[in-house]
Length: 609
Image 1 (cartoon, rainbow, N blue to C red):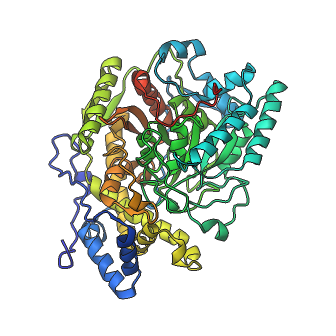
Image 2 (image 1 turned 90 degrees about the vertical axis):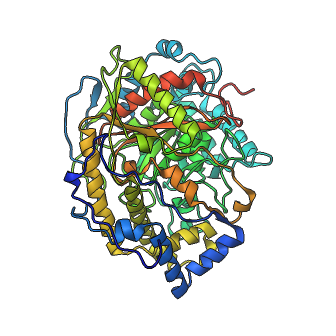
Image 3 (image 1 turned 30 degrees about the vertical axis):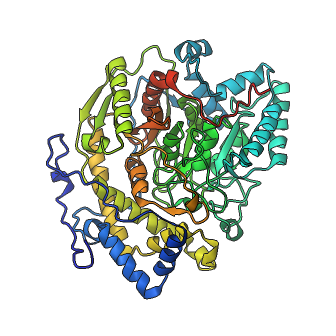
């Protein structure tokens, strides 16, 4: 498809689309037409795209070949646009959850979450795992309270481990910035609180890392660039960081990320490419690459990321950890780089679903953010209940579910079978129409919002300060106009309708988290970054609904491919139903935890000699 054929399709009204498993709706695979480019080829491509006339012509051809005009820009769409994925508050009393009062403080919310967890003895019996164990938030808290170790000792070991990991032969590039003096100061204060029997919460003294897209003093916020912090100084903590500090969390630094969050590999020419702890020659995924890697490597039980297009769930899956993206508006967005207003959300990466739950409890807000006029009651899952959720219905779209590597398809299918057999839960087949259309609409949206949010900075910037892959991305991003943006929001309306209908008859939608496992970091990409849109499309294939439609989603590690690289299974939930998601993820984790494997690069901060 090229210049001569950019006529748009005419979509039938959403209410007339068949969502049943026997639907005649056609599953369109990602139509990505772009070769992998690195080195001098990326540079030439960027130069051409930045040319006034030739660049516009090339961008037109690229967008036509990748069906942007046919499926989005020139499409006929009956639905009106929906610009923000806000969801109505539907209060339903549920026996399997604990409702949290609006007057509770962050520390009280964390304590409520802890009260929902199984007791220590139950946990030891239920998750006995002789092969590999990641230290959890509760492990740290118990060790601190019993004086087996202090936060100061953990901080010292953490600093030594990060220093070692940053040097040859590992060159892990976990962090963009960490401040030894600040870490030790926080740890000393936490140690003092434990000595006086006054820890602020179970998070007191527990190391938590932060993606360098979130404001967190004393660090500049670079967004993975070499320049943004010079134009946008960080003057205060983001709201989510303030909440963690009130709980006593030990904030240990700013993790590496794909430049400006506009890639899925985590390869960063300025701050180094974060390497996968399970195989240091492989990517971590992005853009929250460093946050996933530090958790996988045992440096932190949890870290914060930001998820605009799977940016929490993709690296979590590739690095064998949990990734939780809450409903749009549940976690306050103030103090986060405004790279994408309507699709980005602060998310949590953690070694276990329990740890993700505890951090979620700390940073969840009862105060509306974005354009949510109200927020529903915060509710937590009763993971310690003697009565598990009696019935769960999981919606599965077979053609989409199977559009991945054989290893992922087999592993995810087996995990789903385990879940069904062990708990008696059922899977129903459905059709989710226009998934590829949704991916392109999301791309048009995130591209428009990112280029607009950065426009005042880019006007002052010499393009040589941008990475080459970022220059290409921003050239493409800047080519989207108002017609494409508004048509994309019409697609958002259609997809919100489709997903609402499906989730009216199912508790979650289940899918693999990514279409491929972590692919190699090739040396030719280290200095210029790389353009690999085919792998990129495979990585984001299952992530888009969570962002574009504002739905909560979680990925749980369930196994490994033939080469030992992690695989994740994703559950997409109803708006505001994080409690159900966490409960289902907890059940999945319990069936897989005994088979978890230790990464090649792993630091044990609790028992280190």
